[in-house]
Image (cartoon, rainbow over the protein chains, first blue to last red):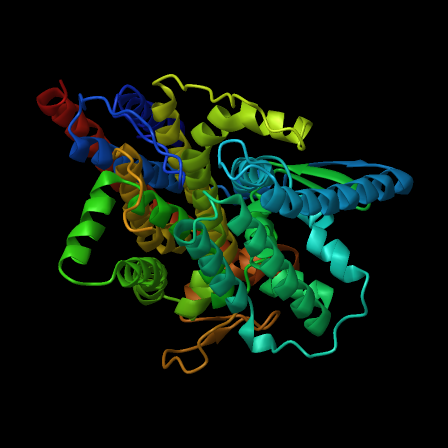
Length: 465
Length: 85
């Protein structure tokens, strides 16, 4: 007779062996941060297909291993574990005021120095702080530690000063405006040159401020920043992965990603689309900044298609494909198991696990970029008004490429566990809970293979942009 | 949770919370998991039975899953021996 403990031990062995096999793989991964290229490429000692297959198999095997855990009480204990610390109201009010002032000062400096500072990206306060600071570092802080954007957000502080909420927000729009907004912002980041020209970045910030103030005053501050504002929704969704949450009463600590299981924040298809868009935008910017992606784009443009059309088709088509694939998994699940759950309800149930994947991808795409630019960022933040003569960039050791593989996989493993816990909450039958995850795990394996492939390709700057 | 109202299959509806299931066994399991303190002796017995029946199915699933894991492990071991250099 085989006992579960033995099974678990064997399984752990398989998992560690595959992880080890992956880590010892010297496939040099490259950072795909837009506008900053320059990673080197070693020769592959393992053929690329084997490296990708191993990555996919690691996710699949860990899903099988998770399915050995059928003890509801244990699963419950894991996602309910929490520690809380309270603090005095004056402390939280003081921190709030400091955060709000900091946010406002930062926005003012970004716009002012964007126009008046040197128009060179590597010494520009606006570009360094926006991309190395907010896009990379602050977003990492948001999902690794805690979400503080609600306080820091200068636009919220600004619009709270005005009377607001004159128009009823149409509820059926849900968070679709935020999905569109995130797609537009990533498009602007890739195509408009905000990563190269500080004055363009400052103009975009001014335009964004204008739209936000008008919108928030019209529909109300809370509704706007909860449903429409792309930056807030982006950070709010990432923040759900974070172990720590700070509110007026104090700090509560949970295991990483476990809020995704219990909080039921994802309520409709628009929220699912937000989660998918977070995964997709990183995959897209990964794709267009690789040599292979660039040569595909060049080839299509040579055939006579305008470059922007090519990018737009890849961008929106890819997003539709990612979302479609995920919804297809929900449909297959609804058909495969005996249940009255609609495909839509299942898609909503399992969507939070996508956020763990997105966090893993974000870390893989931006960690090296953030570390290498961190001296520049510290320099910019400590003396905003005097740009350095010689900006310092750290050169990363070769094993940093291996870290990217680990980040992608860890994100997926967390997602597998989140999906497992969700399934146990949704289904009374343990066998159903196990079987309901398979189509979603298949989609996750596809996502894993795709992004491991992207980070193993050499980078190039996207053509025609 | 949203459920498909137009489903043509039999509906086994939980009398405590209104959740519907396409099979009696699923409803029995639902009662045991979601309303454990609220069952009479017959329902407890039914839950116990359904639970152990599922345990048997799970055991067979685990053995198959273990087979897949072993196949994956040795499959990849061989692939790495053949192709990694």
